[in-house]
Length: 120
Length: 421
Image 1 (tube, chains in turn brown, blue):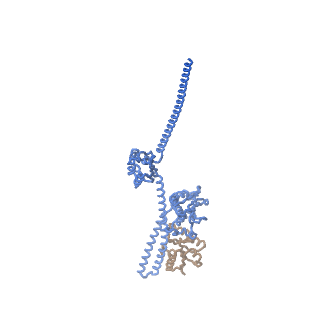
Image 2 (tube, one colour):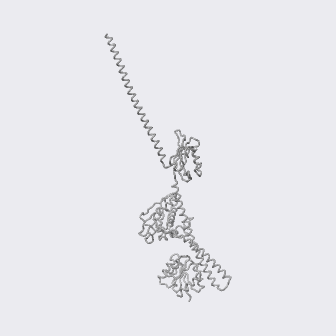
Image 3 (cartoon, helix red, strand yellow):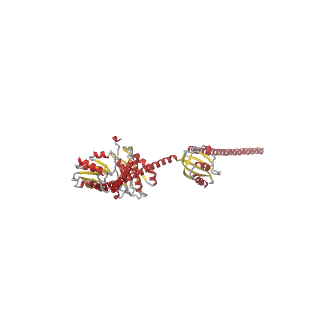
């Protein structure tokens, strides 16, 4: 059974392109344009990895991660953001995520991180 | 004998009469003369008094001219070369010349070398036509130092109306000018910072918008690369080039964003009322020229805040200039009110309340978003930058329409806490 990846990013192109790329690696990918629509979806309970954009209107990535943890979800989270922040990785780890990748993301980097996370 | 006696007696009487007459007329004369004398004496005394008071008056006027802080000079208008015949000590002090340098010298000759611009010609024209002159001009002291002076020259006429002299007064306005230009400079600097800030914000949001499709392009290209793995070497090469260029473009954008982030705010302890006063001082000339009035209701007992002076000035400047624009040319909206007060022990509130046209309800929500503007030449950055500045200070910026007319922009700022100082 293929691994599920959930992508939450307000930019449609980013969602679509990452989905196609990850599919070439054999992942099952679902995309959401807002954190709200992700939490409202009932088919996200399957094990898998959550890719969270940070800058989103409404609920941002940090808030979404808090809600994700509060809901007792077991999805490991990888933050993705176009902005380079000095302590972003540390902040991401502190927020309970497994990593932080800056856009543009190389597919290989992302997949390596996903695989190492899911192996644990 | 009897006759003789009578004649003698008569003679005696006559003599006496003459004597009497002479006496009385003499007395009369004397008393008249003494009265005359008295009168003359009175006249003399009066004249002397009059003379004395005229002398006193001249004395006081001369002294006043010598002690006044304005420079005074008098030109002889009868002589063809208009020589200067009097200068007071302030004239010498302000111009740096000595009496010897100026007395007897033609006014226009003297002016010829110490005035720039076209003023001398204008002054000359006015004086030759018997008119007065009024103007603020830049002049040079004897040592070459520049000074600004407000010069007024008026003709002095005799009883027949003939111009005999010109009297000139100069007020040194250098200090006022300096203050004015300092204010202008500060305003220019602030506007520059505001423009740079706007540009930075603009580029930053532009960079964000561009980096998203660049990220997408990379993912698409990598997907194709994988789909054609081991096949189509020419295609692979092209795709690799797309990837390389995409990464290069992303790096440029990233560098740009980092460059913009270097303008880190400098937080210091500030008194918000001082900041309000300083900022409005920069706008004052503009406010007056628009025929508006700024009123203040500042709580003088406010605690200090921790903030970036220039950034907060930018916010105030932005709010005030927006308010002025909202009030436009309408004479019925003149008043702008700036308030500061303590909302609670931890928060200071600043309000800018105008009596302008108010904000259309449909625009209130969009006011603070990037690129939203109701002005034909606006960028739509001012309020969004102002909000992000206030938020970076830990406060909030909000807008609402007033009950009567106009709108109020309010921002809160946290009171400086000891641990952060």
